[in-house]
Length: 84
Image (tube, rainbow, N blue to C red; front, top):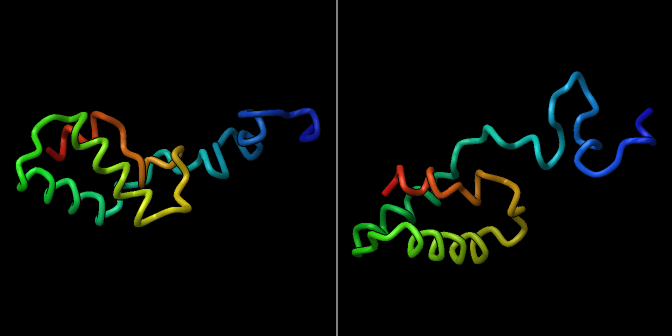
Protein backbone atom coordinates (compact mmCIF):
# COMPACT_ATOMS: atom_id res chain seq x y z
CA UNK A 1 0.00 0.00 0.00
CA UNK A 2 2.81 2.45 0.79
CA UNK A 3 4.11 2.14 -2.77
CA UNK A 4 0.86 3.65 -4.10
CA UNK A 5 1.13 6.80 -1.96
CA UNK A 6 2.53 9.89 -3.61
CA UNK A 7 3.15 13.53 -2.73
CA UNK A 8 1.54 14.70 0.49
CA UNK A 9 -0.05 11.30 1.04
CA UNK A 10 3.41 9.77 1.62
CA UNK A 11 3.47 11.67 4.91
CA UNK A 12 0.20 10.12 6.14
CA UNK A 13 1.48 6.63 6.74
CA UNK A 14 1.15 5.90 10.44
CA UNK A 15 -2.25 6.01 12.19
CA UNK A 16 -3.40 9.11 10.28
CA UNK A 17 -0.63 11.19 11.84
CA UNK A 18 1.44 13.46 9.67
CA UNK A 19 5.05 12.37 9.92
CA UNK A 20 8.30 13.55 8.46
CA UNK A 21 8.95 17.16 7.52
CA UNK A 22 5.27 18.11 7.57
CA UNK A 23 4.78 16.68 11.05
CA UNK A 24 6.29 19.73 12.72
CA UNK A 25 3.15 21.88 12.45
CA UNK A 26 2.68 22.08 16.23
CA UNK A 27 6.24 23.07 17.11
CA UNK A 28 6.79 26.23 19.07
CA UNK A 29 8.61 29.11 17.43
CA UNK A 30 12.35 28.93 18.03
CA UNK A 31 13.42 31.22 20.91
CA UNK A 32 16.13 32.87 18.76
CA UNK A 33 13.43 33.97 16.31
CA UNK A 34 11.21 35.30 19.08
CA UNK A 35 14.19 37.27 20.40
CA UNK A 36 14.92 38.60 16.89
CA UNK A 37 11.32 39.78 16.50
CA UNK A 38 11.57 41.62 19.82
CA UNK A 39 14.86 43.24 18.71
CA UNK A 40 13.27 44.34 15.44
CA UNK A 41 10.29 45.85 17.28
CA UNK A 42 12.53 47.64 19.79
CA UNK A 43 14.47 49.06 16.82
CA UNK A 44 11.23 50.53 15.46
CA UNK A 45 9.81 47.86 13.14
CA UNK A 46 6.01 48.04 13.26
CA UNK A 47 4.76 46.65 9.95
CA UNK A 48 4.23 42.90 9.82
CA UNK A 49 5.60 42.68 6.25
CA UNK A 50 8.80 44.39 7.34
CA UNK A 51 9.25 41.97 10.25
CA UNK A 52 8.49 38.93 8.06
CA UNK A 53 11.22 39.93 5.58
CA UNK A 54 13.73 40.51 8.38
CA UNK A 55 12.85 37.23 10.12
CA UNK A 56 13.15 35.26 6.86
CA UNK A 57 16.57 36.80 6.24
CA UNK A 58 17.63 36.03 9.83
CA UNK A 59 16.49 32.40 9.50
CA UNK A 60 18.33 31.94 6.20
CA UNK A 61 21.54 33.19 7.84
CA UNK A 62 21.24 31.44 11.21
CA UNK A 63 19.47 28.22 10.18
CA UNK A 64 20.42 27.64 6.52
CA UNK A 65 19.12 24.05 6.48
CA UNK A 66 15.70 24.90 7.96
CA UNK A 67 12.80 23.92 5.73
CA UNK A 68 10.35 26.64 4.70
CA UNK A 69 7.63 24.13 5.63
CA UNK A 70 8.74 24.12 9.26
CA UNK A 71 6.77 26.70 11.27
CA UNK A 72 9.40 26.56 14.03
CA UNK A 73 11.64 28.60 11.71
CA UNK A 74 9.17 30.14 9.27
CA UNK A 75 6.21 31.31 11.37
CA UNK A 76 2.88 32.36 9.92
CA UNK A 77 1.93 36.01 9.55
CA UNK A 78 -0.44 35.61 12.52
CA UNK A 79 2.29 34.24 14.81
CA UNK A 80 4.64 37.08 13.90
CA UNK A 81 1.88 39.62 14.44
CA UNK A 82 1.18 38.15 17.89
CA UNK A 83 4.84 38.67 18.85
CA UNK A 84 4.91 42.25 17.57
